[in-house]
Image 1 (cartoon, rainbow, N blue to C red):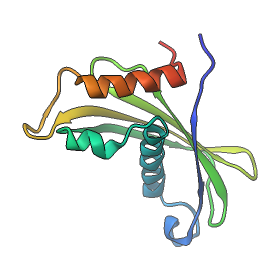
Image 2: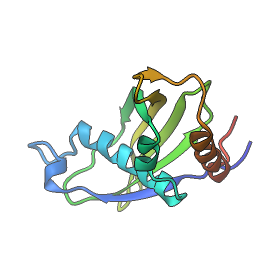
Image 3: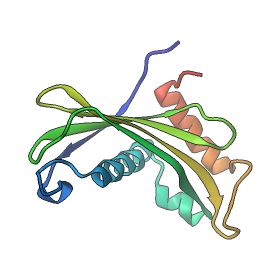
Image 4: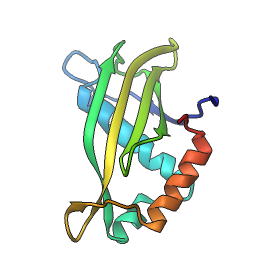
Length: 146
């Protein structure tokens, strides 16, 4: 086993992230997770828009969240993400969202994506060289456990 390496994406809870009680609305966590994933790719020189321009997209096929502790307006948090070894063309991203001031794990989550051929609208059964190269960079960076 190797040590886990994460990409950190800091956030601060703004009023528009919360419900009427001042607690982060569930959809905000999903948006933060996507932002963290895109910024993680960017940190390795991979622009998601470039992949889209090459004719494929990564479509979400599964999302799961587990709430452990609420985040409230004004709090600072860190969205931690990493790519884990998937099966076939499935890409499994794991997340932990932590409140920074109180050092509390607030949310854990996972998103599974599959590459879609934009012209055909179908799942790609094989990764293109560009996509495979980018994913290899990610796997090397995070030394994902197999």
